[in-house]
Image (cartoon, rainbow, N blue to C red; front, side, top):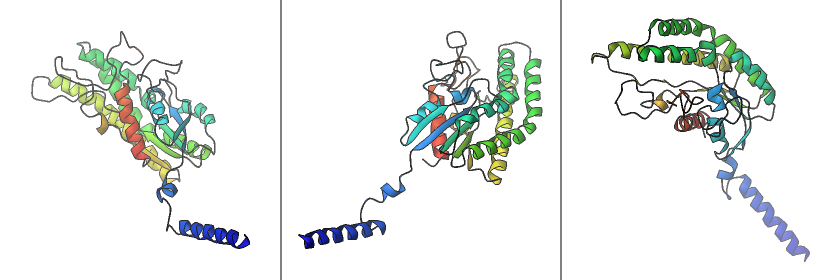
Length: 280
């Protein structure tokens, strides 16, 4: 009996040695990523506004990218702290949801600091035949404010890294709202308006990228997720009668909460870009 027990122990020890050396057993088990303990921070995009019926006063929905990531393999959404209307300074109050156990953080913020909603409203009125001056003023105001964003946003990313030192942070950009129009085909004024609106988004995204680069250089584990390419050909089409597939809400009457916010397809695109930024 004693010999059989010793033989069994020896076999177990040999098997353990082979597993440690990689000689037996599935290698994928060791390389499989752990479950992400995930917290979402930011504004209405981070909350998922437009991804379905609003669930609360912050316009969180079940179709936003945070909710979709929660359904991805190895993801556990601990808290979506994002809220519609949030600016960079407002996100500071959301950081209480973070701790050393948090392993993934997403952040979308900056549009409200630049007044992107005001640009959309003023320029939508101009596209409908209204005055163009408010649109131009809103765009110029945003472009003038963009260089001031990297410092506070970089500081916010640093604060996130301090609160959640074991987390990978993904900071997303914003998509182009409008589908570009061709110049030289009788719609030059409208094409210029579309380009100006999208240029304002590009200025915001450039400021976000600068903040991410600065925070990364200071030691934060942070990556930028660019969603512009993912939304290509899925912007709002301003030329009537032209076939289009916008990934934004376009009905202010029947869907006021989702108007000009990503819809479910848009948030699915966000989700895929974020997963790619995390290497998952």
